[in-house]
Length: 106
Image 1: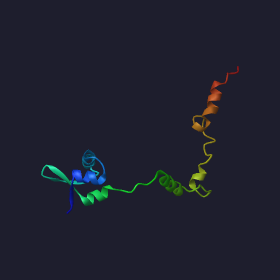
Image 2: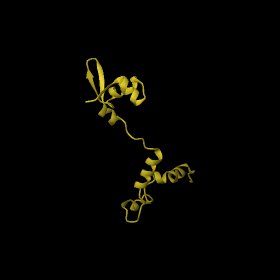
Image 3: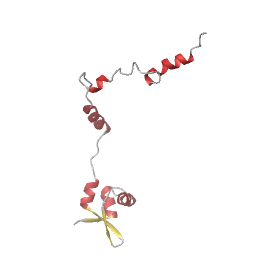
Image 4: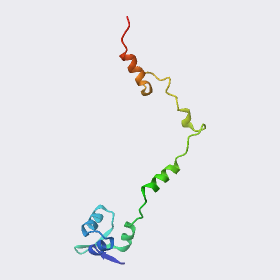
């Protein structure tokens, strides 16, 4: 079992020892107590490090999962279904307001 001190862990990660202690306190980095000090297992350090993915790669992956709507899609039946809705429907809000603002004729 290979264990590292807080200082050694900070040097390996190129961060301050305070950051390592925050990782431990947040539960992001597993550590064991040895006397009054804390030690970090090398395996836990390997689990902390994860690859970085760019935002454009995430956006591209999200676009690839979206498929276009087709006529056999159940959502296509909802398009335009609110045209005969009562005036309280948000699609006809402006018609209702225009009627309400129009002067009354005797």
